[in-house]
Image (cartoon, rainbow over all chains, first blue to last red; front, side, top):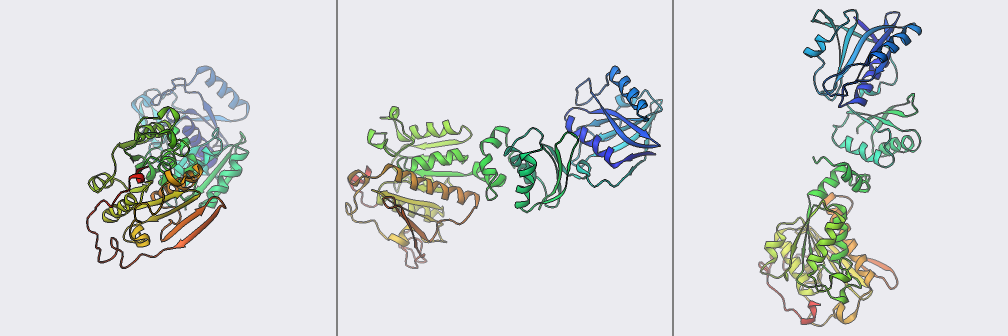
Length: 215
Length: 268
């Protein structure tokens, strides 16, 4: 059983979506049996179908975890186009039997997160228990997601409208908007068109994560 | 649904931002076909705005060549175009504004024999002609084929325009019945026209075409809009679809297209 906070799931989906169409990868670290921290690693393959980590960065991550009182619990990586199943290569390269292997699939609109224990090339699915009721569940709750950081006004609103035009009524759009005019203008404009803002939250980098239900 | 390129999203962003146009409206514009009859004072601004708006197919019919006296108001034509056919000159400008669209040119004089074949391909027609017989011919052909159109006319400081949805709203013949006797009304060539008046009216016609295609707002139907730019007075005259209209009434007298008598100066 992999016990992970909703916030952490949210963050690894966010990481996966930010890297797409390339595979994203990283570590999941636990404290008192609960995974509550993710460590984003650079995919040195920079490939849509492979990943590998930089040994120096791996070493750094392990050290940093230890110093902060965390222990490494799992490796995660994304499948931008394929289901959340370990590929033959994933199985072959799962060197550490003490870690779980978490795969985030972005193949469908709604992301899938699955965990596996891989020992001696044998794959066993592992249950995931998601804990925590964080108010903001941007990426996991969104049917469609758009990272509009770096996109100014009014093109961010244009792209939001394009995204809505491809969605059904009632579906949820997750947006990331820059601080300043974007966060001041885009939500106001979508409300004027009858859509509903479900949640809005500032991220660590100052940008805003917004969830909107399509009218 | 069209997948807009990044360049298209930027090009049409000001349309997409409009609630009444949006992504769907822009997609409709890109799929729309509009014919502009006459590449002159009205047709020039109308065509330029429709091209800029991304109307996917624009047809232009005109038999004339560009003359120096046209340049005071026919803004699709430049001094270098003098002597060149108006449809070619206009098509070049439309493609220069927007390479996304396709332009069909017809270098011929529109008449009863060719009008049906040409206009039947189009969703909307802009009447930018300069003479009454052709205005009635455009009305009759559009009514018979059921193609919505915008009527427009200008003289001196004045303009008038109305939008017709055949079978549903008052047509040009409901309102004016028959062309005036030849030479009863002077042409622009005789009476003169303020250049900007052509722009005012042609852009109203373009706006009507864009509204019709996107479904935005309320069209200028059952209404004649007239203006006097000298005093900048605008007036809306209520019109009614006439039961005894010889073309769109229930018992039409006109069932096929004929060319009305054309005055020589009407061509200019």
